[in-house]
Image (cartoon, rainbow, N blue to C red):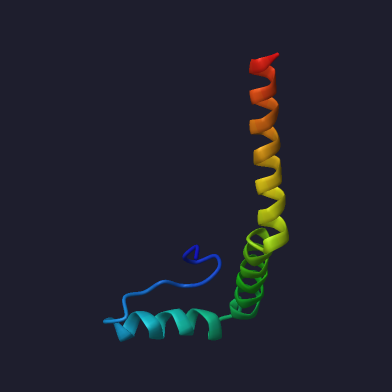
Length: 74
């Protein structure tokens, strides 16, 4: 989690910090847009770490390793 962008981190021993985080999401003229932006950033993070995305990254990594190994042999 990216504090302030995809959610809020707080110490569980500090209930006031939880109350402040919830308040930031519920109160104020920009609360709705803050919730929307935070939700969109959270969804984007999930997509970046989905199985298809991770698989593609792994395939690209192995391709680079294989290419480099072949270049050394040639």
